[in-house]
Length: 199
Image (cartoon, rainbow, N blue to C red):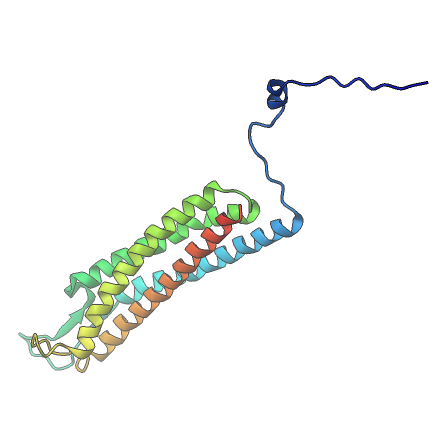
């Protein structure tokens, strides 16, 4: 009594036809939880960056000081709109803050679907643009704030912070807030890049 099993050989064309067209990746529960943790941290970082960016724009936009000694014809006043650099700072930080607010729904999508790649790629690209704008505004404003505090004896530029102390405190605080926002954006870019690398 013999048993034979008849196995028909499939040609390579038939075998190729059975392969799936789109590769699917299955994640273990641990990997999915890890990705969800990164997405939640991304959301919290965005909230922190929003607060810092809008605080920087609001503080700079409200910085103004008038010295108490003035006459009817002369008034000593310092305001952010006296300097184009500070105007650029307010506009740029408002754009960064607005972008970060608009990016929150995409971050929520990544919490719900941690393995989604398209929203993550979009956020990485736009985060880099926002970081560039933030760094440009913060760097330019920091240079002006430095001159306001220290002046430049070679160019005969006097330090104005001895007279306009409140104004200088506000603009310095705005610059610090912009750098906090920039650091948060750096972490967002690195975090998103790390999450994409693990796909």
